[in-house]
Amino acid sequence: MKGKNTELENKGWMSLDNAAKIFPPIISKSLSSVFRIGSVLSEPVKISALNRAVEETCQRFPYYLTSLHRGFFWYYLEYDKDIKPSVVVEDSRPCVAFPAKKGNYVLFRVVVFRNMLSVEFLHILTDGGGALEFFRTLLVTYLRNCGYDIPYSEGIIDPSSPVENSETEDSYSKYFRKEVPFPPKLENAWHLPFEITEKEHLGIIQAEVSVIDLKNISKENNVTITEYLASVYLFVLQEIWKSEKRKDKHILRLEIPINMRRSYPSKTMRNFSLFVLPELDLRLGFFTFEEILKHVHNYMQIQTDKKLLSKVIARNVKPERNIFIRTAPIFIKDLVLSVAFRKHGVTKYSGVLTNVGIASMPLEARKHIDNICMLPPPPVHNLKVSCGALSFNDRLCISFANKTLNTELEREFFSFLTGKGLKVRILKNIWDEK
Image (cartoon, rainbow, N blue to C red; front, top):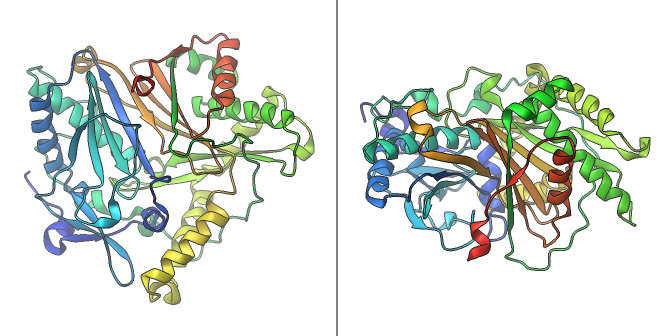
């Protein structure tokens, strides 16, 4: 590595970024907050080449070689250049919890199964944007170690390039403006009525659709791909709501993470995402799919405006600047954050749709890669189902993670796409083989 991050080199530790601070008090075996980016390769993974690639890649991303520690006032990440991530063979369900609170344990792992290569990150370290950059570098470095002549192009970070200080900044704090007001409070949202019958169950259903075909049908409706998928999601939720006998809540709301690096000139490799929350209020009546498309599009266009996003940054950052909160012992912060998460973090939305974007890879690498997918973190208890999407080489991989045995949401979602003329290919589920 040609350079080191000044904060890591001089201090040996980093404070958690604003988004990461919620996770230490809430993570558990059942709420892992772990997500995965993985690829199916054209050949079985070569462990020796992978081990070298992991070592080379980690040298370029030293801020991920950190472990979680508990201070008197705040948690922090301690840097150790000798700490190593686990390279493990898949032998259980994906996205299992890390023993993060035990300390001296790196917060990401590399997972291998036959010709599958994946990386799992605890959200304390980074979001989908940062994880994707790491994975792209790891994948190209691995293929080079296998003897293939592949350049670090398509914006992929070369492991020999210097680390920039801006990669470890807390961009939430950097772009916080104290004079900005908070966004309005939201009503609680309706949740899927499915029962969780097996505590450790996590069902995975993945499918691919053509990016070109999906882009065309989205363009015909004057929406983006994310807006189209969100509209399908809300439409299916509405259909499930119609069939439920108990209708005490009428708000259907999606949580859609937005990569803030597209709105601000940030190079951080830590968390820098916010959420927009398109909703349907069924007290107004049922919505046609065309009405939902229009509603979601208008909402997304407005709420992703930089000025309105600054309100969300203000709401998230301003409380931690409060002198009483800053000086409160960590056990009090843990209690407050846990209660706040249960009261506000899991009651306000009916589903999650995470579209990480495009995994651009060099042309020379594409023939060695069958697909690249993103698995979202296992959903919180009352949410039950979460969804992630990632595009590679004209194929959008859509992944559902489900804590229940009821697959009505996934089935109706993909059936709807098929009904609109899109070819949906359900992917083989290796976890059902175990």
